[in-house]
Amino acid sequence: MTTATQPKDTAPSKARHAEIIIIGSGFAGLGAAIKLNEAGHTDFLVLERGEEVGGTWRDNSYPGAACDVPSQLYSYSFALNPDWSRSFSKQPEIQAYIRNVAAASGVLDRHLFSTELLGARWDAAAALWRITTNQGEFTASIVIPAVGALCEPALPDIKGIGDFEGEIFHSSRWNHDVDLTGKRVAVIGTGASSIQIVPAIAGKVSHLDVYQRTAPWILPRADREYSAVERFAYKHVPGFQRLARAGVYALRETQVVGLTKLPALLKPLQLSATMHLRKAIKDPVLRAKVTPNFSMGCKRMLISNNYYPALAQPNVDVVTDPISEVRAGSIVTKDGTVREIDALIVATGFHVTDSPVFEVIRGKTGTTLSETWDRIGMQGYKGTAVADFPNMFFLVGPNTGLGHSSMVYMIESQITYAVEAVATLKRHGLSSVEVRGDVSADFNRELQERLKPTVWMTGGCASWYLDKHGNNTTLWPGHTFEFRKLTKKFDLDAYHATSRRDLATSTKTALEGSAS
Ligand code: NAP
Image (cartoon, rainbow, N blue to C red; front, side):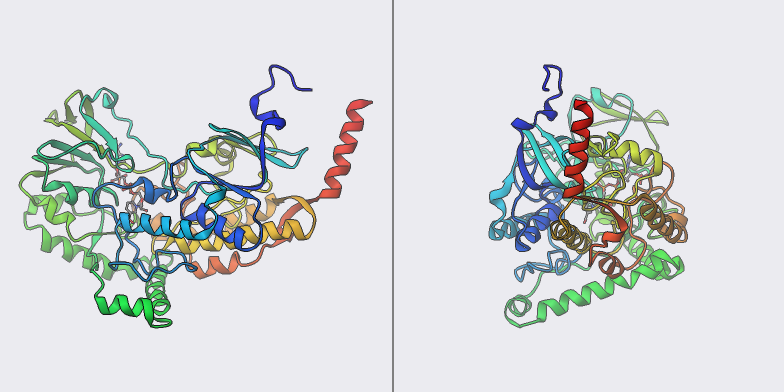
């Protein structure tokens, strides 16, 4: 019986149903929609909180935004783009690519934009996900969260930052209405985003303070425009682009042994980064400030040709004293120095291992993903399935990130697995599958063992790769082709499966029990 006090998300009559609901339409969600559609699983909806596809590439529109994985590899294998203008694409070109793929895919009709996930919970009796959004209620037999790891801005907990009266925004929420020309600007953070923003704005602002907590390793960026001949070849010579892609892929995979087993193999790269730094920065004081104090690879290896030259400009200061306070118009460091600013850019990264999305997805016991992961550590089976969360296939899930290659490759592997799972459910007349706790625990025990000797754990740095317990719950500790092999087939024997008939019987029994 429905009562006046029943929460909204339990009112099934109002809910719109789709067999599969995908949450998010970045590379992962869009790719899943395309592949489900191709496989004939056409009854799906994609709920996207933004106004268009693109995910992180839609959101990160800051000046200088570009990819640090070569364009040939940073695209779907099923939608190669012969028109890339350069070897490392810039954000507008990547976003245009995603938009074009979406437009040509025939799945945009099942996208609901400006639709933000507020809650999802597994209703075991009905074998359904009940999903609440800002646009109403939905139900789905299967849910595919594809919200991305780098989507929730992490704002620094600095005293007084809320009282700053100038312009302030996070790198991934760039305010394009603000003209920084001639302004005194501060950037907090020196990660992948910051090292692209700093050179893009240093020439137009009157003064720039770059607040650095940890100096990153930065390699030269082998970026260049493609010649007309290359572009012709990519478009018209059969197999040429696939070959180029395979070459980039293979080259990137050579870094895996250094990252995961023998960090000493990364020394030549570290030397190259050191030479790069020495060549660009002559001032010994500045050089010392920006020299990293951990092993290369421990944090994401960055690439840039214009970051160091920007730091060496007379209107740019690198501030290494810790920030003690932000005031209405200034930043104060621990040594008492007050630096006046008009605008503050917060390039402090993302909630990766503590995403707010984890707090609103509830499994069969009513526990949220964040509560579950607080208890056992963020983990998934093959980065995709989580015990207690039936019929949920998480894309860009735990330990699927990379320190060396294209996430699109990992995403496509996970999509294959999820599509296979959907096919298996249908083929066997199953109402639900839920990964077995023992299988998932074994998988993760082995994963954590493999992570122990990696440079991410031994390299002497703190990074967003690690959770609050110091475990690496984000990166895949091996070759990407290993992950592809693991996700090629859906392994039903690793799962508890409930057939539709069993569900009907148990529901009938429960109803009879409650009636008697
Ligand atoms: P990030 O790598 O997490 O860097 C955040 C920066 O902010 C770090 O320098 C960090 O210092 C600093 N920071 C954080 N909290 C701070 C605080 N309270 N006070 C002072 N400094 C603070 O974030 P991101 O640069 O946005 O990059 C995130 C990820 O996005 C990258 O690793 C990469 O995977 C991806 N990305 C890729 C590209 C690309 O393809 N080119 C571009 C942008 C981003 P510590 O180092 O000391 O923690």
